[in-house]
Image 1 (cartoon, one colour):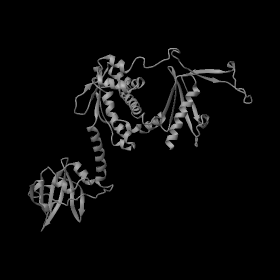
Image 2: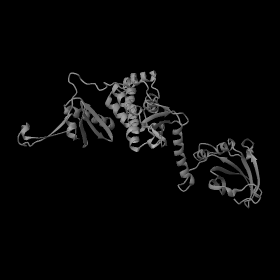
Image 3: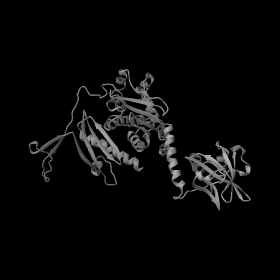
Image 4: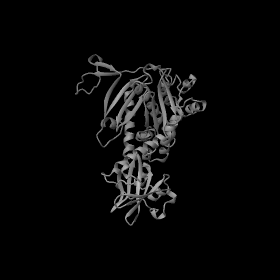
Length: 444
């Protein structure tokens, strides 16, 4: 299109993006100017001139049209911006330009009711990336609309309002992430233990859906570090079980209301005490209380980007003791507190001697707090667990206060058993049983 000599309307000010509809000549063209989007629609041809309808639209309207979500007629008739009827001769000169409102556009100039675009952009088309980028932006925008925000504010102004990377990663973000993960597991078992009574099956289901349960970080501000967190309902669609899917959508909000509560009122505290046992409460709330009771930081929360922040601060310290009793680690008073140690023995045996008795004076000993052994098919078969494929799993054995921990990773899932006894064989049997139960459920 040429510039209009009489400056009735100057198309040179507009950038052509692409012809959306082209039949021998452009029928519908996308133009931009000053970060605004426009559609130029050929509605009639008379003698030596073409008549166009020119209207301003938004990016989301173009996206909806390209993805067959809205008709061209609806775009025109529901457009709230002022439109123009432009007549242009075949030499490219604009000879007439009239303002027209959508409700007064000649019916003959309107497309059919079913004027949806049947369109599949090629990789060379501007709209190929436009559609994918817009989907991503819409997805993020939708998450932000439903996000809540937490803020870590330093109380010491030595470094202004900035937070150190180590403090942020180790003391703040990690504590919230740990608390949330522990809440997910505790609440999942609370919700479904009556429906699926087998704990191994429940644990297997939980481990499978865990990646889809995470909150998404959708906004970020530095200084007084702020994070926008949202529940990704789209990702939850991968969960097939209706009841579990509903729980997965609601559990992020439940965590915010129970754990990131700004005042821990009587109703909230009672609900916490009634729902979760002492061990789970310790795992869930201890990481958060480490932040709220740290004099160097303030933890704040708000329900949306436009809300005001509220400080999470437990003024009545007896509430902390109610939620996390000091005696949460129960010890058998008769036996007292045990402190286990792993002893590794090195000795030499005669292969031909059927006796496996060893003499202490002929052995070397070393002690440690942890060791690693390999679980193989022989270990599974020892407990009547037969596998039809070869398996080798590193098993970590670690001594802790009053217990021994057995932990292993298989199929990118973590398996763990804590056993308050020095009978290692029984601990190995339990974690082997857990892994075998997972394999059996996985392969069904």
